[in-house]
Length: 579
Image (tube, rainbow, N blue to C red; front, top):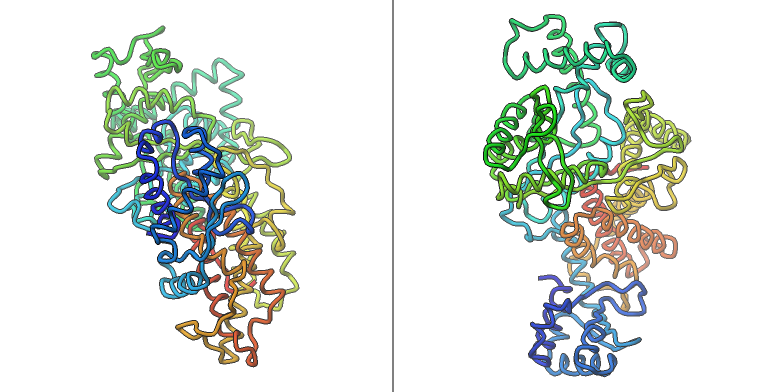
């Protein structure tokens, strides 16, 4: 149990003793919250429980706070858990100040646990499958896929850090109209790229009725080939283009996953789940879960659940995305008996997923209970939202190349070997993009600012990487000067500094990020911690043989480097040793 939980437990014990009906008040939304004050002068932790209780017990909030505070002292628990001082402030907040000894012990813990610091066992035993990225073969990997990948990978690592057993899944559309459009475009003009062929096919599908019929016929042939296993009766040219394009696409995606630091455990394809999904819907139709609509389609009437109607089997008798998703849910579970299934996609299909989950509750109620959809916002550039249909797709590679060029310009005068500069450029560029995506709440849209995103002096990925590189430089200097930290940290300044205090909160932030599915809490914390370190670095000579506190300062720097590495790992951001 960490210090925050200890404080909460102490408050709960006191409040339950003072107010026997407190358990019933919890049903009315009254609970003990222990938070980190925004202003340092209000302690290291604070609770507003007195303000929440005051109206219910019909007393002044300051009076309630003082009453709780006096009884907490009576139970004599405060000093035992590392609290040096407690005070009532403002309109009734109870503020807790930690002792110097607590900060020393925390520092020892960081230095001892290293890569394990910040871990907890909140999710121990949980088996979770996280599905994310989901690029479709025959199409390019665009910045929407980058958003999903960055968020899904970070969430996977946050859950792993808390004891969950994680499997990473990637679900890809290898059948459907988008494939037929690409194949049609390639048949018409073999010299065009797969993306150019898609744009050509999409344009023809929308503007020419004959082309639309040709593409729909190709779509049926692909389904026959893939789903019915009838290659002997299908078009050999279509077959050849299909398998060539799919293989080329998947190899291309793997190169990108490697750059992004993701390795998937499972790959699922629409061609594998389509027939099963269709079978599920047909069976559901017989049970009255689905209904027949116009032109022979089979639909789910979402209006019964306050949602909207969606088609699950088309008029051509083909399973739609919705039917395939139903099949996928069961196939995933058969492959990995998960407790939780988390699906990360763009938020433009949030409403679609609500209908899907509603239908799943009727067919696979247990799986529906285990399934959570997370819809993220869109990344935008000054040109506007991406669109592969218009041919104005902003690919991951084109964006990465622009960022890499800017990073190269930033570090071109650094005295480093070219090979090292190349590695640094790649790590910083990818870190830049991931930080920009993860720095705010998942559902928010992002406007990517090139100049701000590559700054070494502010709210950016390179700033965190630079701060860590600076700390590593200090540690190398300390080693060369033969300044070693005392394992017991006996020589230290009497008063803990803000930098030292900030380091205690990392486990709290990790826990909060996991509970709320929000990596941006870690981004914010690391940025604030880096500012504290850089301020400390500017105002202190850390490596100094004549300074009796130098070993302690080096220990602080090492602890900072450990926390920063752990935090950046949770974000999926690599850490160059030099910058």
